[in-house]
Amino acid sequence: MKNPFTEAYRSLLDIFYPQICYCCQEELADRDENTCLQCRLSLPRTNFHKQKVNSFTERFFGRVPLQYGLSYYHYKKGGNVRKLIYQLKYHGKKELGIEIGRAYGYELAAVEDFKAIDLIVPVPLHPKKKVIRGYNQSDMFAIGLSETMEIPWSPDILQRKVFTNTQTKKDKFDRLGNMDGVFHIPKPGLIKNKHILLVDDVLTTGATLEVCANELVKGKNTTLSMATIAMAS
Ligand SMILES: [Zn+2]
Image (cartoon, rainbow, N blue to C red; front, top):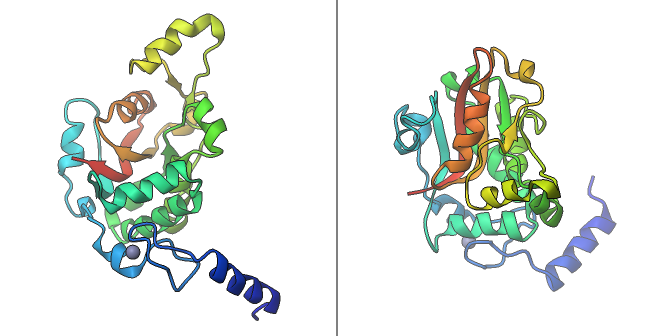
């Protein structure tokens, strides 16, 4: 049953703060949506879930043994996917990450091969960034995927080490992109005999994903796949 107070409140919200499409800025009819249907349908999909070998898996060829490499969208400069990622990361729109994950997970759940995946693991965010942002955008994507794929996710498998002041040299290396030893797995027994889906927001060079992956494949009989919201070409 509709709550008249909630309905009235929402009507007021619509007048003073209309919900707009994150892509085209047009006013949305439905407050619960983030994008209009037209923009949503025109987002550039990769369809990597239909090709076992694709430009995602090729990017990691010779670097990390991957079962599957998946990305929902192509990431292009000035494109709508970029606008969505920006809202997710810098405008506190964490719900958007969950919704994208749900939608993608719904499509992935229809592929028989992906039923072999046991656990979804997000790339941890730098603790300082997490304090500023309040959440890890990769966790949000993982939550959505987990719901529709019906596969558990865990933010505790892979952890990012916090270096103390006496280790500032290490911190400096981290900023320069050398991430050896930055990630660790406190309980390796939890990934034993598991097919892990490592997830992140955007695949660019793949440096961070690679470092995480190298920790995960140290697990006993652990196999690995990756999924991102978007991939930059
Ligand atoms: Zn739109």
